[in-house]
Image (tube, rainbow, N blue to C red; front, side):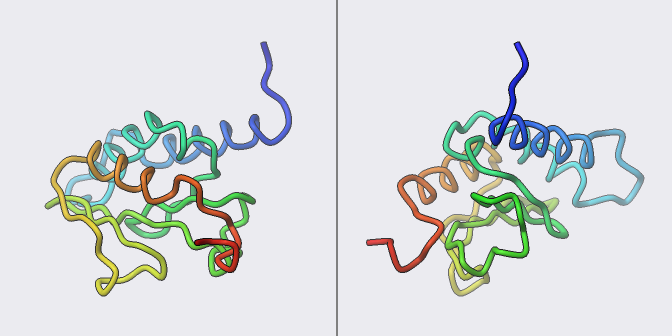
Length: 127
């Protein structure tokens, strides 16, 4: 059964993100292994899978439109990955908005999903 429309586009974007970060990783690549673990974990979260993924440097972001250029109008959280762990940040992203620091990609994904649930792409519509 083929998946068409927006759901198909989201699925293709998730597969593309996984492909971009999949092993084997080059020697000294600190972001690749962590991002790979995070993306695989994020796929287990239906709330996140219902959105478009995009990555920037060592961060996972989600979008309702699939256009990462619209990120300023979407107040979704992000997760930064490193060799030492994962940092979940509320929007606007940055160290001043850290919600969770963990070494567990599943905990980071679950936190991101929890913060994403029920959010609108329009910050003015949020409660």
